[in-house]
Amino acid sequence: MAKPKKLIVGNWKMKPATYKEAEKIFKGVVRGLDRVRGVDVVVCPPIPFLTELKRSTTSKKLKYGGQTCDSENAASRTGEYSPTMLKSVGASFVIVGHSERRALGETNAVVHKKLKAALDAGLQAILCIGESERDTKGEYVTFLQEQLKTAFKGLTAEQLKQIVVAYEPIWAIGKTAAESNVRAEHVHEMVIFVRKFLTTRYNRTIAESVKVLYGGSVEPTNAEELLSTGQADGALIGHASLVPGEFLEIIEIMQKK
Ligand code: PGA
Image: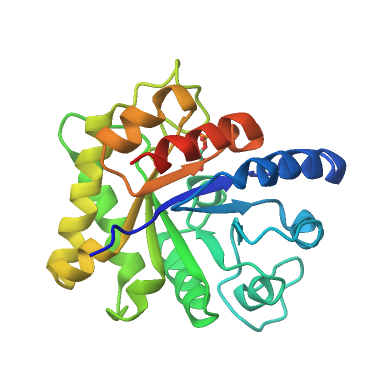
C-alpha cells in the first residue's frame, strides 16, 4: 500500500501586516514548491488575503485553508464567516480549535460545533488539541482526552476521513527551536495517544488513517527530530511558515521521509 502523503500546513496567524508583504511571502513559497513531490502543502493566510493570493498563481501545488470558521453555515453573525464561504473561495482546509482561539473563549463544545460545520461544508478540518503545561501527575492527559472526546462526539467513521488532528502543546507554541523544550518523545507520545483514542472509539484501521500532525516551534533545525523521530504525519507551522526559505526547508525534510 502506498504510504500516505505527509501534510505541511502554514498557519500565518494575523501576519503579515499588509497584502503586499503577504504576496511576497506567498510568491517565495510558490516558487520553491516546483521541486516538491509527495507532500501536501497548505497555507492558511489571513482571510482578507486568501482570495487575492490564490488568484495570483496558477500553481496547483498548494492548497488553502482558513484559520478558523463559524460554527454555523448560515446565520446572522456580524463579522463571522462560515465554512461554506471558505469552501466557495477555494479553501479546502480549516483549522479548528487552535489554542489561540480557545484562549479567546472557544470551549470544547464550540470547537465540536465548528468541526461539524466544517465537515458539513465539505472541508478538511485540522483539529488542534494541546495542553498548557505538562504536570507530573499526568493531568494533561485527562485534559487532552476531554478535548478529543468532546470534539469527536457523535462523529461517524466516514466523517473521520475529513479530519486531521494537530497536537500543539501551548508551552511550545511561538517559541524558536532553540528556546523550546519540546522533544521527539513528547510528539511520539501524543501521536500514539491520539491513535489509541481513535482505536477505542472506532477501530485500528480508521485510527491509522487519520493524520496526526505536530505543531509548536517547528523550524528547519528541529523538524527532522520532532516530525520524523516523533513519527508525526506532518506539521502545523506558525512563524517559520512566514519565511519561505524555512517553510520550504521543512517541507523538503518531510519529503525525504
Ligand atoms: P509556531 O506556531 O510554529 O510559531 O510555534 C504554531 C501554531 O501556533 O500553529
